[in-house]
Amino acid sequence: MTFADLKITRQYLDALEDMGVSEPTPIQAKAIPAVRAGQDVIGIAQTGTGKTLAYLLPIFSQLQEAQGDLPRCVILVPSKELAIQVGEVATRAANRTDFRIVTLYGGVGPRGQMKALERGCDIVVATPGRFRELYLREALHVKKLKHLVLDEADRMMDLGFMPQLRKLLEILPTKRQNLLFSATYPPKTEEMAHEFLLWPTRIEVSPESTPVESVEHYGYRADNFGTKLNLLENLIRGELDGKQAMIFVREKDRAEQIGKFLEERYPGRCRTLHANKGQNTRIQSLELFRDKKVRYLVATDVASRGIDIPQLELVFNFTVPRDPHDYVHRIGRTGRAGREGVAITFIDRSEKAAIGRIDELIGRPLEIKLMPAEVEAAPTPKWERQLQARAIDREKRKADPDFKGAFHKKKSALKGGSQKKRRKKR
Image (cartoon, rainbow, N blue to C red):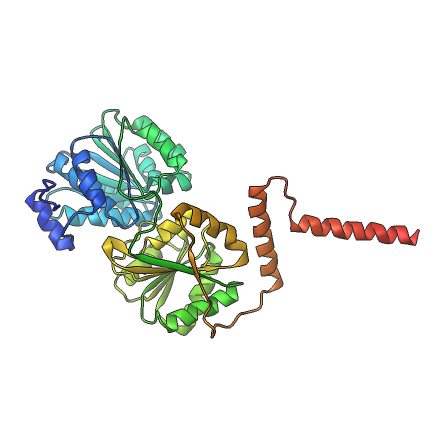
């Protein structure tokens, strides 16, 4: 099938050719006709399979041309990074039309965005918080709205956007087309779909929550943070030397530590990306990474979605995500648009339960490789051993609410020992 078979007009075919997109992906082939027909649609497809164009192209064909000053389509996304990315894709796909596209997100002052809205727009790409803020300032009007898209809907639920979305639902025109696109479809996302969509057509092109087939993914057992650092250095200096990589970690302070470690060994070739970084710094880091001026990007899950680096070859999960869906999104940064990629996960003893959840979600156990013999095993400091023990206790408590934990047992044992000593003294 070709885009011409999907009745995509010449102006968009030319734009797609400029973008290097030659043929539709499965989600595009199935979703474009349904969206163009005006149906409410739930689109579920793996990360990196072209969901953005799956809803943009048919919406463009329905809007036809620039019209009036008020937006007729609103695309809501969970993060600034994704807003910027979707805005860029929309601008490139519409570069042979007169559509006006405005991107709204927080972290920067609203004045520039308000002026852009005053000049008139057809399509708004926005985070829910900034959208509501500009609506309350009466800088954004929705009475002409005909299309609402909820992109990365599962991530919106993870980040707690549902109360904001419900408030937006109250102000939007009731007669509109609703589209929900997501890489995963957990129960919370399904609940959102029931509230926002009317008799939707569900389109699912692959088993829910499975990684992209072109990504080779496997793991290593590593006892602690120090050993993981040694393993990381061994891999990127050895068989993976020269590859550009994203390195995911749960905590912001850990991201900074890994960033400093890599910066010492590769001066000027590493950046970190997390919520404490300013918006301009985050945008600059992404641009440098896209332009391959930076080899390593260390990021928390703020970046696991909404970052499209088509040529990215390698992803490291330095720590295992607690939510298995985040694993799918992390490794989805590589192997995009049918390209091959590699994703490697480092696992300490406190992360075995999280790996079990990932195995269950993807339907098979993650392959665990033997640690390279030349990697030095660092000793586990006491504080890290305690953190791991607490994490293990939390996991056991989830499985068994009556579980008291290792620290409770230790405390009980110490208490019992003290009582025995007191009895002996008597």
